[in-house]
Image 1 (tube, helix red, strand yellow):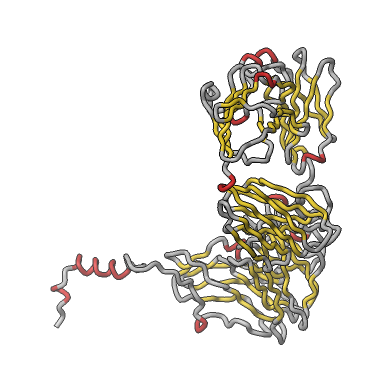
Image 2: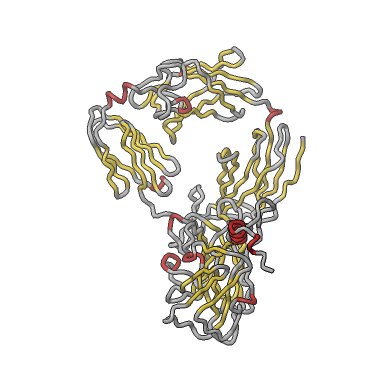
Length: 556
């Protein structure tokens, strides 16, 4: 008997629609399983004597294709890009009819992160299709690790590439013969490699185009070609760095009377800065790591030129009178910023922490040309201090070095009365400048001894102690023995990082590498200093042989 007349038509339609809506059920744990290939319905992987027109990969779930043009790479490279199409659960790769594959060659199709599951976006893991046009599948491999040259940390998601062309330009112009990407530990593994000699490079590859985009992306490279053969280990280690840019004047700012800011693509030490010889022109140069500040004063408003290496910077005519209307002398921490209309109130007192036994550095908002110490007042425990000295820093024209006998466990008050300092334009501080200087007690401080091991006698090194991003202590030395000892008394109890730089060119700073000059970055070693507590002495062994460092002794 037919009962279909008893089932309402609208309810039957609703049931059919519900059956058609298939997807992930609501609730439940998130799907973290990547899609995998259903080998029963896919083109056979690792086949020999293979002459494909197309390759089909069917997956065990619904998938999507993401950035297939960049992610799907065939090596050795093809003359024509294959067509990649997704239909349901199947990805089909079709070769161009005119494509001529190499004889007796192993091809690898690396899908990268192109294939993802439909709902959660999990990428198919290590998705590679391998075939040979000859009788054998190449089975050699190249593996290794990439680390950041500055921090020593593993470099993740870095494209490691092998080329069968030795030209330096190949990494900017061509896709690699083989490639892989590093994991979270910085390790990579390139399989099914043929025997031969390869150029090896690794790039940050932020746009994932498998080419190096120059100064915009970090790079690592091997100094020589890698010989891959059966008896070789083929394990490489590389340091990732920001390539040394071509030296140039990268920025200039002439918008403010009295100051021209010049920024360079490298160290400012290499900048040759000269000026016009105008009557009455006074110039003071201040150099930072990558900039030159040209402070100037003119008796009459005029335009003039600064000559920077081969460049000419035109300084337009600005009004000195208008500049001086709103100008005053401040300590730099008190100087008004763009978001402020006025500096802090005259009765505002900024507190600074200062270590006993060191000279206090005061940074002003402009070059200081004279000091009237009779208008300087330094008070400790309500008693005015004498016997201190205040002098300009010859290398930094805005700094005044205040040297005094700083008693541990005390607090001092510094007052610079109006007129105490005079800047380049003859302006004096119009308000009293105040600082509260706190000197910690000896029991609040720590002592650190660092024993640096595995040095090369005769070579120059730089030992730095960093507190956060700031370098608080620095020692430049030429090693006289494989082991040198350095003492750092009176350190605040804080998380410290020790860094040793092999200053191979003896210029007193760390230099990055240069791919075009085949120069690696200067070796850099870091070690976290743990357990430095107040009123403690800590001895640390710092070996430049990775993995051999050890903290030896703590005492209270």
